[in-house]
Length: 185
Ligand code: IMP
Ligand code: MG
Image 1 (spheres, helix red, strand yellow):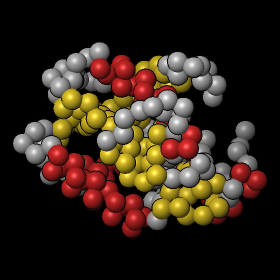
Image 2 (cartoon, helix red, strand yellow):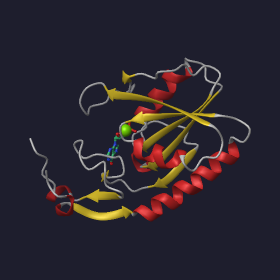
Image 3 (tube, protein in one colour):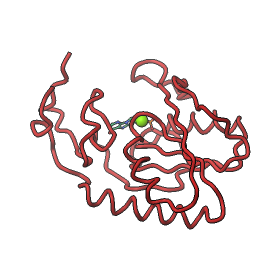
Image 4 (spheres, protein in one colour):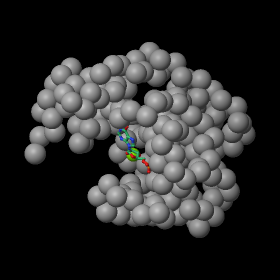
């Protein structure tokens, strides 16, 4: 496995900026949901670091559940952008205030599809909190209620986000210099 220093273009968001912004988001969310419980749904796997830090900054009662989805067909997305649930929630969400926690919204197909699927289960409310918004790449309009950072159209890794499944453990968000990155077969 390549050392990330070999292909790191720049550190886009250092650890202290991540934590600062997540603390702000936690305060905002706590205010908005005052007097209610929040059922946090984390989309695996990229959202786990964000979830872990965000939930510690939320002061109203929270419960947590997880789901994983994958796109149909490797990389190529159909116009419907339908995704498939590979790991479903362990609890029902009917009548609950659900907040989806996502690492990044790119084309928007993943979150749009997840929202459609969850709506059919009749939550009381359903909102989206994403750490990163790669807005220039959006192909389908999706509601984003809470956003950590809007980022340029660059492939990023670290802090939960992977490059071929590695580097999720890094404490910062970095951009990749593709000419210097060599995925192992
Ligand atoms: P979307 O369906 O195009 O919005 O893609 C969302 C998913 O693609 C995210 O949940 C990530 O798993 C992945 N993704 C998109 N952009 C990046 C990136 O720059 N780095 C790592 N993963 C990404
Ligand atoms: Mg993801």
